[in-house]
Image 1: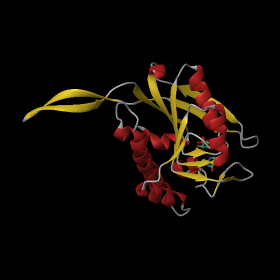
Image 2 (image 1 turned 180 degrees about the vertical axis):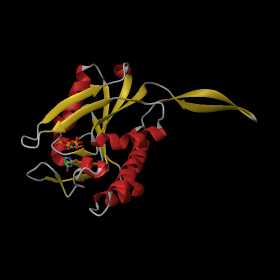
Image 3 (image 1 turned 90 degrees about the horizontal axis):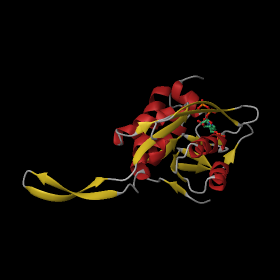
Image 4 (image 1 turned 60 degrees about the horizontal axis):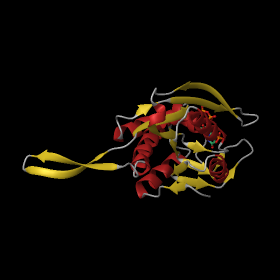
Length: 209
Ligand code: PRP
Ligand code: URA
C-alpha cells in the first residue's frame, strides 16, 4: 500500500476506539467524529506552504510565518462526510465547502452519484475529500474522478477507517491522492461493510437506524 498515512496520535486513537464502540450513541458519536476530524486536519494541512512576513508586535518587528499558496477546499461525500466538516472548519475557517452526493447501491455496492455543488474556484484550491469510511473505495474513487474531470489538480482524501481493499483501489486509480486515515481494517463483509469498523457511519451520525 502506498500513499497512505495513518494518524496514530493517542488522542485520535482513543476517540476512534470510542467511535467503534456499539454503545456510543448518536450525540456522542457526532461529537467524536467532529473532534477526530479537527485533530486529523492538523496533520492533513502539515504540508501547507508558509511565507515570511514582518509583523509589528507591541515591542518590535518579528520575522514571522503565515500560510501562503493555494487556498483550501473541503468536499464531504454525502451523507456521512458531513459529520467531518465542522471539525475541519474549526481549524481552517476560511476553507470553502463543496458537496458531492454519492451512495452505494446496496446490491451491487457500485457508487451512485446524485448531487454536486462545488465552489466556483474549486480548480485553484487544494481539495480535501471527507468521508469517514473507505470500504470498497468505489464512492471515494467516483468523487475523486468527478473532481479531476472538473479540472481539480490537488486532492487529498481524509477518512476515519480505511479498508485495505479501499486503499488499494484509490492507490491504483489515483496514485497522486494521499489518503489520511486513523485506522486500517483488513476485511469487508458480504455487504461491503468494514469489519470490525464502526458500523454504518451515516446511520450512526444521523440516528437513522
Ligand atoms: C458510506 C460511506 C462512504 C461509502 C463507503 O456511505 O459514508 O461514502 O459508504 O463505501 P465504499 O468505499 O464501498 O464506496 P453510504 O453509501 O452508506 O451512504 P450514506 O453516507 O448516505 O449513508
Ligand atoms: N459504509 C459505512 O458506513 N460503513 C462501512 O463499514 C462501509 C461503508
